[in-house]
Image (cartoon, rainbow, N blue to C red; front, top):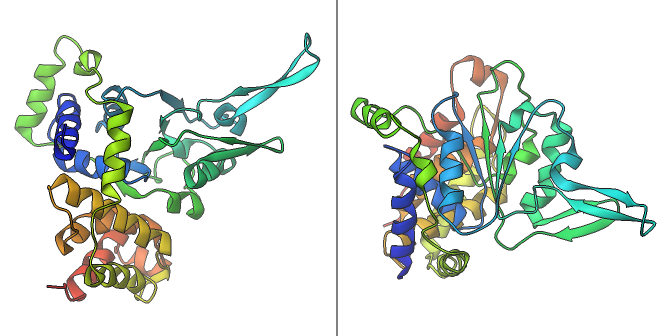
Length: 310
């Protein structure tokens, strides 16, 4: 299969289950093939968990799901050493984090201490526990879901945790006709039960390597960095986006260009992905929040103010 065929085949397979969410699937796969992680934030019932499971079932890799709850402990994620009486020694039993695709469902229902158990794994593909380090697989992808922080029983994610996610976006509600189609598909059983792997781990590895080869001109690099740096100087923002945001923006844009059959990144790719990549990384002051502004609006204003390279 060609590079575009791998992407199109995977996207079409997911769309068998997720109706009317082509743009969200495109963003999800842009992060997946550019070594990022995803935070899906939306109200209950919009298909966040289903999207994650559809991706996992479409690829022949190991998938684990963790349901985050207030009593969840870091060892429930990472693993724990248990004493073996026969060998008179401790044996490490790996936790669900040792997988290829990890669904952290309702991540903001667990305590900040438990949430932070994912930090090292997401940033460095390794975990440190009981003075030992364990490497994770090269293909390690976290899809976390969360309900809006205003909901009861939730804990806001720490800033360091938020910065580990390449993108944050919501699915939103689909159009009337698409919602009717969802009812038709699920009248007898859920279509995800019939979903089968359509690409292999080798296909994923190949496409990830091709993404990194997509060219980015100096003008487009300056454009990306100017967008990120402007968040550090804009009124109403306490903390702007870090250099990690620039890296995530670059890699995701490379993936989008490859999906479009191009070997170079255009400003349109930057504009398409800028809000989900940057908006969750900035901290607004209280006056801006009380005035009704949000981070997405700020990024939109920045994009409209910065000259686009030609």
